[in-house]
Image 1 (cartoon, rainbow, N blue to C red):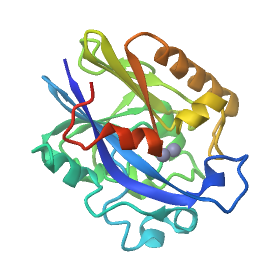
Image 2: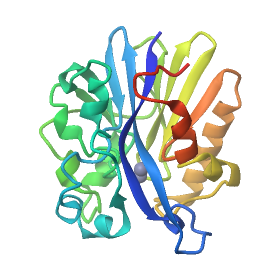
Image 3: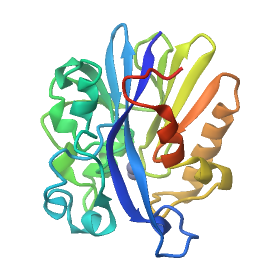
Image 4: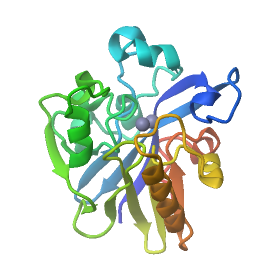
Amino acid sequence: MPDLHALCCGRLAFDRSVFFPDAAPGTPTTVPVPGWLIRHPKGNLLFDTGIACDAASDPAGKLGKRIASTYRLAGAIDENPVDQLALLGLAPDDITWVVNSHLHFDHCGCNSLFPKATFLVQRAEMMAAQAPGSRYDARLWDLPLNYQLIDGEHDVFGDGSVLLMPTPGHTAGHQSLMVQVARDSRFVLTADACYSGEHMARELLPNVVWDGPQMLDSMRRLRALGEQSGTRVLYGHDPEQFALLGPATRALV
Ligand SMILES: [Zn+2]
Ligand SMILES: [Zn+2]
């Protein structure tokens, strides 16, 4: 059985109304940017690579003025995938697979650090990112990396323990991941298909939405999974939940 570790790959500070459109502007919030390490007998898998490690010194230059004017990078110096993996005795070259839930800046920012990995991205996401006029930042993902494009569900190791699931709506080709860590215990990693438990409870869509009805449908499917016995849902940017998960060295059970 694989194990699962929560890595903190940055933090974002911004106005709460960005995530909660029904909140009055003026209230700051800070959320974690998780990466998730899965150690499987057939290889190590990293789900999302966080914010670019070199962005803190020049956010506008590295991420663009639009992003830099909305979000302040608030992560500690060691809150990046390289330092987090090192806590577990791993180097970037020890990662066999990288899964990008989607290609927003806070989910693929460190892709360039994993040149030996195979990247699993939904074809619909890559096509949306490559489309003329796309607002995706090509500097972060349009790199000489080994991308394997996925159409729909995908069983990464062929044993049912790590499954990719399309959860479109936030973006065209967003995907979530389910990992079985014990016979009676599994986790669903939503990424940005659902930012937090509050979004799930209120069926609240954020400002950043490609297709609202599809996002709502994806959230409801994730909730239904979470209601199955032995299944826990881990949200994309939930400060309260993430704080409970503990350091990268602790395997989640
Ligand atoms: Zn996103
Ligand atoms: Zn995000």
